[in-house]
Image (cartoon, rainbow, N blue to C red):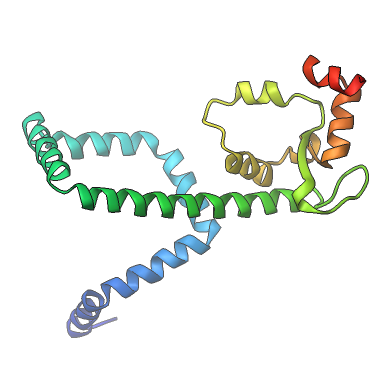
Length: 196
């Protein structure tokens, strides 16, 4: 067991190196998918408990204080247009970079799970590969999904899904369009051009 002096020394060291420790934790969290998955599962299981906690936490903020804070924020925005613009540009750049990185990561994982080449002809250039719904029910699936559908979430669902091999296959552009035409999955506009 640690003595009181050791505990005090450790606390002082932690205070001095707070930024460094936080950076290590952030990097560990960012790189370890299992940690995020565990935290996500915990949040889902304890959703009601979190709602009660949040209600108690934010009840202390009265409407008058909220109104004062809003007015102060509006004044700051009006008086600091350059800072607002800089912040907006910086946020937009980092957000776009993060979205692209996420999409690339999950797309690669989904393609790898689906075989990384065309199911019919074996073509393996990722630029021309497309995820195809085996039963041609992509439109129906998109309507059933309640959350906003971005391509990164689509690829993530494929990479993490258990039914992936039954529902999806990887096809090159040519094989995908031929399949759509033969299975009558193409709308009338495309069919007219294909027949001529």
